[in-house]
Length: 58
Image 1 (tube, rainbow, N blue to C red):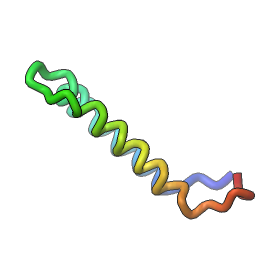
Image 2 (cartoon, rainbow, N blue to C red):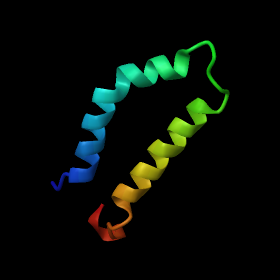
Image 3 (cartoon, helix red, strand yellow):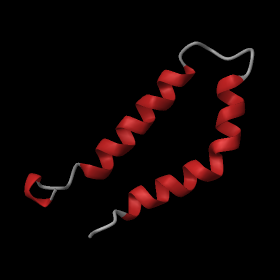
Image 4 (cartoon, rainbow, N blue to C red):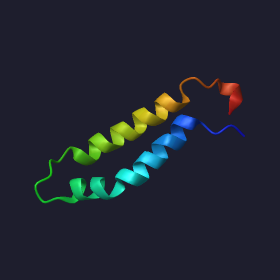
């Protein structure tokens, strides 16, 4: 099974940045769009990681 190196790097960076992100998202003075911005980044990162795969490789 092939493990995408970009995906592994993203998971490691997310684990490192998780405490900072939780403080940023749950602060009292946070903007309403912050959770949506994070989810858009997650979706874009996932799409970017799988864009080069052909349908028969799944």
